Length: 194
Length: 363
Image 1 (cartoon, rainbow over the protein chains, first blue to last red):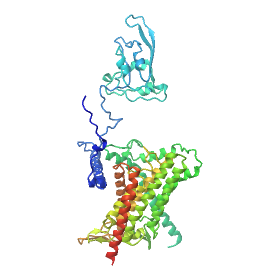
Image 2: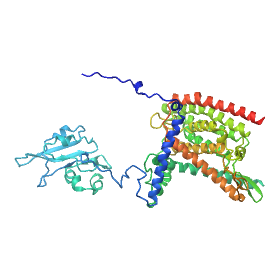
Image 3: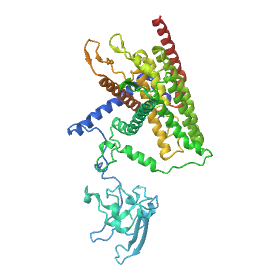
Image 4: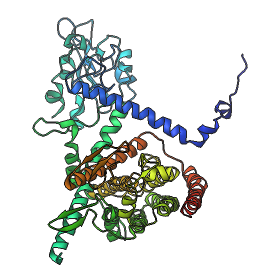
């Protein structure tokens, strides 16, 4: 056990010089700083406006609906249910995700199948996106790698609470981001706005 | 000049200055968003469009107005419904009224009649502005009181304390200006700033009262209740006096802030930056200190002067925006310390020093 060094807050405080304590000079320096940002950015915006686009842009922000930030491949986005090669859902209705879900947003109804290697499959699989906290526990819990959060869809909205509940057909139909590429999903109009 | 013509001229001047204040106020709502965005490396509001035309988000002014007017006007359960309704009106009314004594040009001669470019050339213009700014606190206090809400009431009380504290400095700094120019009339003060100092500097208040300008700006920004002195409002944390206001009543409080900001800019211009005076421009044209002269006719001179006034006011609006988006908010005790322990003694010292110098030079 090492010794714990306690740093009192007052020790961290830098002693201010006389001019800093008068506040006036510091105010002036702050104004110079922000004014410099203002004029530099205004100059860059003006250059872009007249067509000179080789210089740095005036704003550091992404122009969201037109330009999107690149997503990390690990980003947890809207869920989808993976399929087997024959098109049936990989999900075996083991209820792991429903059990682990901290927001209680997954509802699975299981049914029996004749296939002896599976035995169960989901009759219905609903995710209430309105309650989901996007923690990703369901993905980690899944023994069949059936539920994934790799669609790259982050814009989710509906006009009613019921509209936020995604059923099994929707979840199975969503492509992963890697297949979809940058093509936008026409998903809001089709599925969520009901 | 007959009475009808006189009334017509007065109405014309009133409409000009009110439209000037209101349109600049509307523009400031856009400037506030755009300037803060450019200062912070952002783009700012640019989505409102008419037929795909965006013009840098200028239509947001219209969009804001439409939004404000069509929102639900929620009136809280208060026994003072009338006062609740009239408080924002008071707030904006007295701010607009103060523009009556701001001179925006010297005078023009139309058909043999000399028309002063000022709505009312009151010979106690400074006192008039003080009176209006003092009454403006009523709008804030009544809003806080009639809202039947403890947070709003506390906001109103903070506003009272702040505005009364800073009004003293506000007035005392101008005593120096009054001592130097020996008049209370705004137009006369501007005229007195027309000469030259040491043969080359314009005889503006800023060169005669540099400390006065600093104190006046600080106190004036405190009067407008904007950051860094927005303790009466403090929307995000401490909840201000207009928490119970919605729709255009809230909009009027916001707008009154912008109008007051223009008023402060106009006052700083008038008292310290020569009002409508253009450096080296006399009634007949430019006369530069190095001997060059450039004759202009009366109309050119007058247009230049009005333009100079507008440019100066716009600059100080910009400067106030810059201050508003640069400095953090004062804590209430810091505000009171600054007002009573720093600004008040300094303004007293400034007044005393000015009086001594004026007496000494004048002797």
